[in-house]
Length: 317
Image (cartoon, rainbow, N blue to C red; front, top):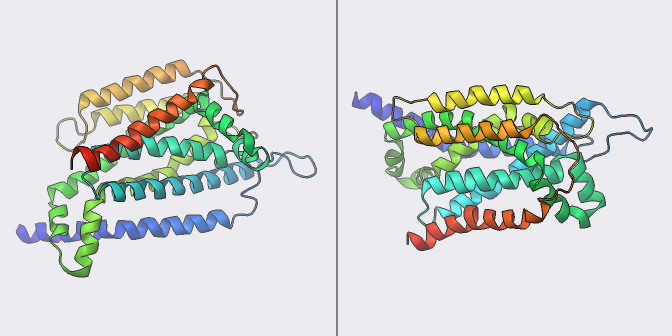
């Protein structure tokens, strides 16, 4: 039995140690495909002859640029995680404040700036209007739809992360990795210290390529010329995913958050979806709430950046 357990630890430790290599290799590959895609930085919905550009072309370029924005966000958040783990950061603060709130807020801004054709057009032709455009975006209906895509991803990703984390904890993989000596042991201890963010990054890459990118650029904020995914489709998928999210591991200690917390997320999401409506406008417009955008910026900086820094280096020193 001990022999089998030891072999399991070794296998899982090798797998974990490959995650950074896998993540970096994937990022380099997709960065190369993005930068070598013809027309990826075009934003017009008509060609030189004033003919509409094919929908598939618009979809491809917006999703490629969205992937680039997500790669940038992944580098920023993982760098923040490594730096904060030099202190004494609680894992839940990294997962929620940085990995869930800050990363997605930054991802939304990156999507709107360089992912959508509208945003890229403003960046290239009206840079002085960029600040107002971002303020309009974060107080617009597209931000609410983006929130739904984020929650949908959480409903699917968290059970996957719970299972992965369960096997790592159950088999004492982290203590085993911390006990490895030599140069490989130094690398292994680095991975062990940051394994939570690494797991989250790997799962995020996989889910992003499978469905997250598409739900954002074909539903939350589709560019002009792209046929949006029907809202009812997203609603049905989110409802089913939320039920799996709440019911998963209900009779075990696998899942990371309490049932009451998950029920709360589920019902809040249902309320938001019910109030959202079916109309999807491809143009970002100023609303009466746009003046509150700076308040949202301050909250994001204080809660998702300043508070984790305080917790890591001052509060728990």
